[in-house]
Each structure stands twice: as C-alpha cells, then as structure tokens.
Image (cartoon, rainbow, N blue to C red; front, top):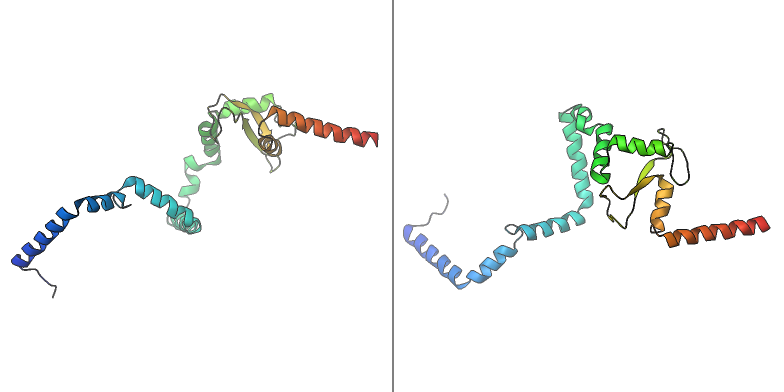
Length: 188
C-alpha cells in the first residue's frame, strides 16, 4: 500500500518546500533557465552536440525508420510525385540556383550540351555530369542569388576552378605553368 501523507505532515512538507524556495529562488531559477529541458537555446546547443557525437547512431535510426516505413507503405515513397527524380532536380535548381528547368536547358543549349571550359559533352549514361558554376565572391555558400551564375561545367573543371579559388591571378599562373611545360617538351 503506497505511503500517504496526513494533512498535517503535508502542510509541514509544503512549508519546508516554500521556505527552501524562498531562500534559494535565484539559484533555482538560474538552474531552470540553464536546463536544456526548459531553455530552447540550451536545448538547441545540447541537441547539436548530441547529434554531432551520435552521427552513426542517427544514420542507423533513419535507415531503419525508412526501411520500416517502406514496408508499411509499399510503393508510396517511390510513387510520390514530389520524390520523382524530375521534381527533385527542379526543386534543387529552384532552391540552390534560382533557375527553372527551362532556363537550365537554355544554358546547356547555348553551350552545345558541353562543359564551358573543356567542351566535353555531357552524357546521360553515367559519363560527365553537369555542375552549375557560380561566382563565389558574390555568394560564398552552396546557395546562390541567381545573378552570379557563370555557366555549366563538368565536375573536373568545376573542382579545378574551386581549388584555384576562382582567382584570375591563380588561373593566369596555371596557364603560365602549363605553357612553360609545353615549351620545354616541344624544345626537347
């Protein structure tokens, strides 16, 4: 049988609790505000730290969840219009580059469906994949304003530009370097 407080013992317990709270009000409020359970900012910081240290655990959880979800809802994930490859591509163009699919196709047509630097043709069958290039001095992150787009490059050329820091001076030094090597080879 659970322990029950008598009315007099409950009154004494409440009086002791009120006196403790009155003496330690500042400390109690400070601890409450710093607690992740009540402070949204502290909770956000705590959760970011927990997620960073438990990446593999989270990945496994999400993998298992999606596995179970697709078992419970067969075909729903694959047939959802918002998850079709065309809609995903359209959404990526719109969110990251402020482009429509028609504008993207127009850029590719203007470049004769090839890389703007090396002129390699883009193929749909796993060959050279197009990458949209933008000026990182305008928009330094992964998302652009849409005004700083320069064209469509292959992965290798886009990576090379990025490694050179989009710097005209670095590009000119690279041209000089390659030119000197070619002159030496021709002389030999």
